[in-house]
Each structure stands twice: as structure tokens, then as C-alpha cells.
Length: 373
Image 1 (tube, rainbow, N blue to C red):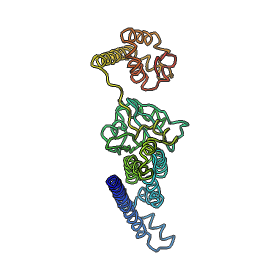
Image 2 (image 1 turned 30 degrees about the horizontal axis):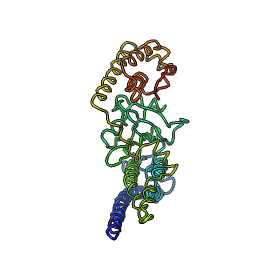
Image 3 (image 1 turned 120 degrees about the horizontal axis):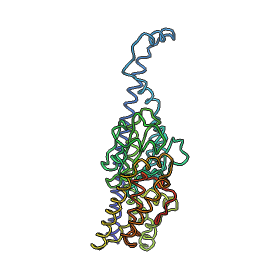
Image 4 (image 1 turned 90 degrees about the vertical axis):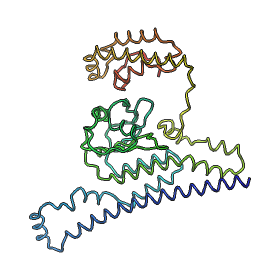
């Protein structure tokens, strides 16, 4: 038992050191930003020489634009309340559930920018989970195929943030159309990483205005990632010390999740590890590959020969009414060729139909008899 206590004590000390190192890095970064802002304010004060109001007005009228203190920098110096920002960062670091961490992150986004979206990846789709500053009544559930060439796909694949013009990505317009927003001048897309892999992204367009708080946004998402990464260790150490030698109770507490966190885990799927699907035999794997190949061929033919009607259906909000006969025939062909045991496990036809014909929007196929969810 002495050895077990020593091990737990060592883990606790390592955790404290890790949290301390993170806090030091955050504090250093915040101080760096504060120093920059102080320089800006001092520069502004030097320019405001003690003149009368009439003299100052005359100087402003005659002097050229002062490059050292641009309106953007002045706006930035007024925009960030560092003490409030630090409070949000500390709140994220101290949170003991995923739900609390993400709620505090959204509070930080609301403080730093006028509009931002929180996206997660589910299989071959990208889903909007939460948003701030949008006029849409319900952003939750907005779907986007992960295959589209967008800034979000880039960040998910590369794991690095993107800051610049959205026009660099060929199909970014599809994303902005889904969000019902005009294309912004510049965007910032930041990854939320777990164990080094991007599991979610933050998409900031600041309501079409220039994004000024780039450093602060990087700090916010980095601290969120670190806090999510440390959460399982923190919870394990806490529950172990609390329960002592009651091993059975300890295991139950380790598995226990609050209703609030459970909902977030189910929807966002960031920390909760996905259960590995049952492995397929070589023969079953071959059948699934054939089913996927057949579905892609069928949908490719549908797309090639019916482009005009598909576009018309997208514009009018229902593709199926223009392609009812063709889609029903294609479905019948697929189900005749593929065994029920295969398509019930993975319905490659319906998946391809939604993603490649309806651009991920299932409602455009209203009227079609889907066999799986």
C-alpha cells in the first residue's frame, strides 16, 4: 500500500507541475500582449501634446495620417479588457468537466469576437455545434461534407490555425451559404486538439470586420485544448485520492458522468473514446468495399446525367421531386445487388446520395424512403 500511495503522490505532483507550467506560459503570453497594448497607449499619449482644443483640431486637420497609431490599433487597445480575459482563461483551466470547459471557451469567444462558430467532425460530416453573434435561430446541426475544400477541412487535416482571406479555398462559398452569411474579408479558423489531433475547430469571421484579437484567440483555444487534454488525468487523480482503498467505488466514480457532461460528450464527441467497431472478416470486408464502390458508381451516374435537374432541385429545396424515378431505380438496383447484412451495417448508397447529390442536406431529398437513419 505504501508503494501505491507513493505512486499516487508522484502523479499528483506531476499534474501540479504540468498545470503550473501551463499557467506560466499563459501568464507570459498575456503579459506580452499587455506590454504591446501599453506601448500603443504610450504612443497615443505622446501625440496628444498639451494643446488647446482649437490648436489640437488644427493639428489633426493638417497632419498626415499617423501610421504609428492606426484606428485598428486604437480599437484593439480599447477592445481587450485583460483582467476579464485572464479571468476567462483561469475559469477554463479550473473547470473539472468537458461541458464547463467548452461553455467557458464560448464565453471567451463572445468576449473576443462579434461572431464565431464551433464545429465538430462526425464521420464524413462537419457539424456546427454552437455559435455566438449569429442571427440564425438554430445553428446547431448545420451539416457540411468534410470532403469540401474549405478552411475548416484544411484545419482539421493540418492541425494548424488559418488566418487570412476565405477565397483561398475553392468551396468556402458553400460554407458561408450554409451559415447564411456573406463571405467575410478575413477569417480565423483554430483547432481544438486532443492528444495532438484536431477534434473540433473554431471558425471566426467577426461579422465581416477585420479580426483584431488574433493572439488572444490563439491563447483561448490553446488553453481549451490543454484543459481538455488534462481532464481525464485530473479526474482520475481526484477520484483516486478521494476514494482511497475502496477500489470498487473508485471504478464506479471513474466511469460516472454528470447528465450535463454526458449530453455534451454525446453531441461533441471530443474526449469520450469511440468504441472500436467489431472487426470484419476478410470476406465481409470485401463485400463492404464492393457495396461502397457500387454506391459511388450509381451516384456518379446520377450526377453526370442529371446536373440541370439537381441544380433546379437545390434551388427549389427538393431534389427528389425532380429525380424521383431515377433515384428510386438507383436504390432498387443497389438493394438488389447488396445483401441486407451489409447495408444495415453501413448504408453506402444513402450516405453517398446525401453527400454527393444533396451536398449533405438530407432535407433536399424529402419524400425518398430512407431505410436507415
